[in-house]
Every structure is written in structure tokens, then in C-alpha cells.
Amino acid sequence: MSFTSPKFTCTSPVNIAVIKYWGKENEAEHIPLNSSLSATLNQDDLKTTTTVQASTEFPCDELILNGKKEDVQGSKRIQRVFQEIRKAATAKWYTERPNKDQEIYVHIDSTNNFPTAAGLASSASGYCCLVFALGQLFEVKSDLSIIARLGSGSACRSLYGGYVAWEKGHDHETSKAIQVLDEHDDFSKQTNIVVCVVSDRQKHTPSTSGMQQSVITSKLLKVRASEIVPQRMIEMDKALKTKDFNLFATLTMDDSDNMHACCADTEPAIYYMNETSNQIVQLVKDFNAFDDGNGVENLKVAYTFDAGPNAVLFFPNKEVTNKFLAILHAFFPPSNQEQFFSKEPFVTEMKQYTEMVESFKKSTSVKIDADGLRYLIHTTVGYGPKVVSIE
Ligand code: DP6
Image (tube, rainbow, N blue to C red; front, side, top):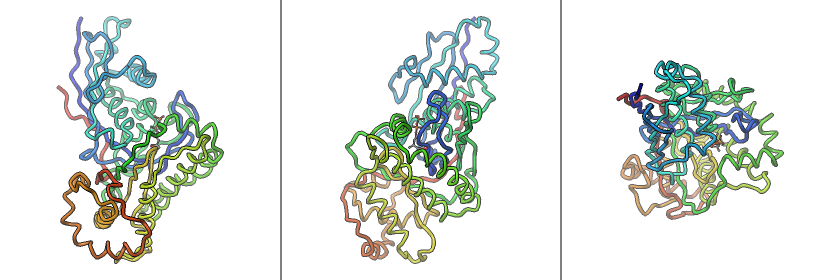
């Protein structure tokens, strides 16, 4: 008897860690050395869209990623995800199929609405969307974040909106994502995020192999995992729940610095940040110490860097974001304005900050670097995966 399922189309978000995952305790099960915490980015700006369908007519599983056929059979991670989804399936068309020895194969088509060149870890939104869509198709009732983790560790955090923790746990069943604040919470709603895509020609060590090297050789990483991050997770939880941006920003920057210190402590040393990254760090520090009219008691912006040179900046509200965008525009004058501010035509609005920018220039040693940034993505905190259509 032949069977073809409806087509499920789903979308999933990108997430950016403010307490980083760097290193696995168990390689095969993707159990991390420490818990981590991230913000889910708004899918109106960045998302993966995945369509899945199952049929007895399909001769094998197939995955098309951004228009290119992937080697499904050769990928251990994809195989493990398929295996866990099929194990947890409750859909009758699958569990009650007449011939249990015969597999029903799936076709998957997945695309990102952001260029790979943006340097954002597409594996998180990609694996999250794959697992979420297959979870709908196979009617999986168990925790999907556990299965997404097997695709790529950071993917488990994209299963929810708002701010999300990946609790380290101690085995396959307990290492999973939980939502700390949803996207409707005031702190989530106020947060503005700017991804600064830095000009860069270097090829960087992929995160999977970079963290493997750090686990083997970095003594600092051991202290990070056993002492620094456990304490920081408690404080970050407090910062979010008390809506304390000052504490949030301090913890975010400290944790990024600490992860990159562990990379530098790795043998051979790994450096993800480049000169432009360091200039952005300096601008952030100088702006936090600069009186923009609202005093200097509270931090106004926080930076964080993943396994690459791009800075991701967090702001407590829209106004301060706009001020800092004006500063970025002045220090990294772009040859293509439109591309620089990919979302809003901000250039006219920026004029009101000319005086503030001129005064800020006097308080920093950062030099103007034309085209140091390729473009900016201005976004907010958003919602988790969604079913878009069932046809
Ligand atoms: C620096 O999740 O890409 O972005 O589990 O091996 O697939 P695998 O690694 P991955 O690592 C992400 C590392 C990071 C920090 C973070 O997102 O927490």
C-alpha cells in the first residue's frame, strides 16, 4: 500500500549565545562541558525555512540545503537525528505501517534567508528547523531540543523564543533547552541586537574542531567549565529576571572575553577576532564610558563574539541603539549606505546625532576605518519555530 504524507513547512530562528557553549564532555551525545544561554533572534530578519514530506514512493532520504543536495548517508549527525525522530514517532501512518521492515523515506528542502557569508552559525537554525519540521511530520511528543542537540549543540537553544538556557544535564535525556524569558517579556521586547558583519578574508577553525582542540589542551577551559560558567549562569538568570541590563551586559562581555581567552590558551592558539573586532570592542568600551546625555552609571551596550570576527551587540532600547549605529557609521564609513543598514533606511534619522558623534570622537582613540564593516543587521529578540503551512 502506498502512502504520501502532507508537506509540512516550518521556520526556525538563529540564536546568539551570551553565555557560550565551548567544549563537549561527551562527543557522541553532544553533552556540553557547561550550560549556556542565548537570545533568539527575530525571524522577521533571519530564519531558516524547511519543508518535509514522507512517502513510500521515495527511494531514500534526501536533503536539499540552499538548493544543493547534501550527503545524507555520509553525515553521522543527520543519521542520528533521523534515527531519534523515527524512534520517537507516534504518527499512525508510521508506527502502524504494514511492513515494519520497510522504511518510509523523507524529502527535506531547507533554505536560509541570510547569506552564508553573513558568518552566522546557520547550523543552529538549520538543525533546529529540520528537527522541528520532522517532529511535526512524525508527531513526536518528546522534547525536541534533545534531538536538535544531536544535530548541533547550539541548535537546541533555537527551539524557543526569548532567552533560552541549554542545561548541561548529565546524559542524553537531561541535556536540553529551557526557556528563561519568553519573547513577550519586557526585557526581551526592549532588547535590540545589531550583528556587525566584519570584512574578513581569513578562513577560521570551525567551532566543532576548535572546541575539541580546546578541551584537549586548554587548562583555562577546565576552570571556565567547572567554576566560572556555573556561577555566571546563576547571575545571568538573575540579570534577566530582574531586567538588569547593566549586569546582563557585564556578564555577556566577560563571558565572550573568557571564551576567546580559552581559544588563545588552546594549543595551537585559535584567534577568531580580527583587528576590526577589536576596534568594535574599544568603541563599545569608550561609548559605555561616554556621557551621551544620560550619564555613565549604566552600561549602554554589550558585545559578544562567536567562532568568527563578527560582533553581535546588545542594547537595552531603541534610542541607544540608534546612537551607536550613528557611531558605527562614522567610524566605519561604508561605500554602500543601503547595504550597511540592511533593515531601516537609518541615514536620515542619524543626522540628529551628528553633534553627539563629534563629541564622542574626541573621547576615543579608535581610528576611522573605511569599509571595515561589510554590513549590519539590526534586529530584536523573537519567537521560536513555527509551522507555516501543511499542504
Ligand atoms: C561559539 O553548536 O556549532 O557559537 O555542537 O559541534 O555543532 P557543535 O558546535 P556549535 O558551537 C557553537 C559555538 C559558539 C557558542 C555558542 O553558540 O554557544
